[in-house]
Length: 191
Ligand SMILES: C[S@@+](CC[C@H](N)C(=O)[O-])C[C@H]1O[C@@H](n2cnc3c(N)ncnc32)[C@H](O)[C@@H]1O
Image (tube, rainbow, N blue to C red; front, side, top):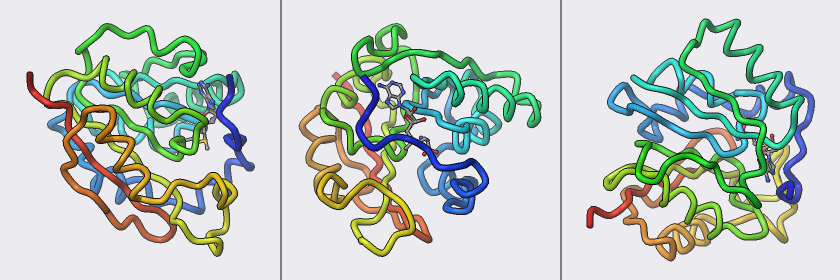
């Protein structure tokens, strides 16, 4: 089931909204991360630069074949050989990745989904203890040039509450990601 309001504008326009390197750095996607997962990789805007930062494999998931194709093209252009792309509906099927197998889950511009806890619980399942979940979203501001309708756009405090409900420990509760985004970073508890 495709997440509501998750269609993408044309790639050139989408890429004007972000500074992916600055955002990935601020969200802790560094060379210390081994394997990472991007839920809804879209054009690969963040997945491919993330792949170039991490030690292991970047798993990118998307329901839209055109997005998987675009991400694959970008990975090839960028010589990112550690990318595995999965054409899959993570809402109804999950990721299919092993439990406790990855270090970082990216939930970028996707938590306006109908059931954010479902995604966060799947993120928790696949993360190693101490692993990170990073969520970014459009500022809660009707003036942003894009983003879900305000009625379904999460506020930072919504993201934090869902993340905590899914059992994570908040590490950074509000990361400013100019020009139009904010981030929340959390860790899976050690048992
Ligand atoms: C708003 S875009 C964000 C793309 C990327 N995370 C970014 O920030 O550039 C959301 C993406 O999630 C994908 N998507 C929506 N519902 C999905 C589902 N149920 N399973 C897998 N991918 C999904 C869409 O096709 C789209 O590419």
